Length: 154
Image (cartoon, rainbow, N blue to C red; front, top):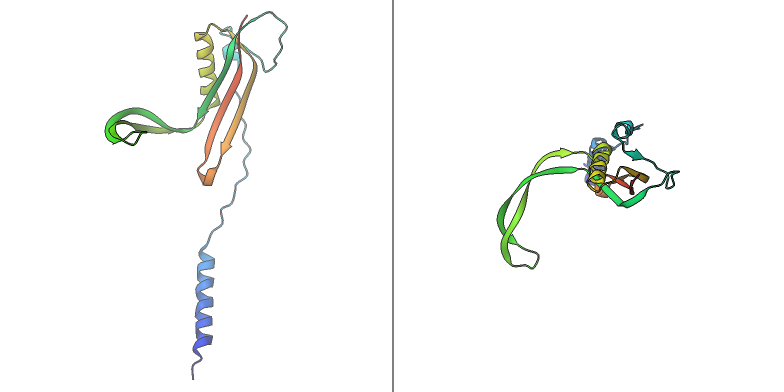
């Protein structure tokens, strides 16, 4: 006579072993990264950069600046479409069109800081700080560079 309870346990055990052997583990790989921004290119253009908040020369403070570079898809345009606005009524809303994916860039962020500084009449930045932020909410990585400082005119 066949023992069905023992047979069920054996089959169940085999099923568990098969599924268990099919699982994979996500391993985090070791990384050693470095990033360098050459301020000489800006110095050659007459732009002063210092991480110090005090300098040994007279200057006029222009204003504080914050620049953020966040990875994501470039917005290359938009179209108008019927949809619900923030008040819940139907209206035309602007729907963005996305281009290629861009990573957060310290170089592009500093280029933006330099461009804004020139627009504001500054020729330097003191108390310059750069901060890299990496968010990982539920494996949806998001990298951000934040630059801060005080724009000055020497």
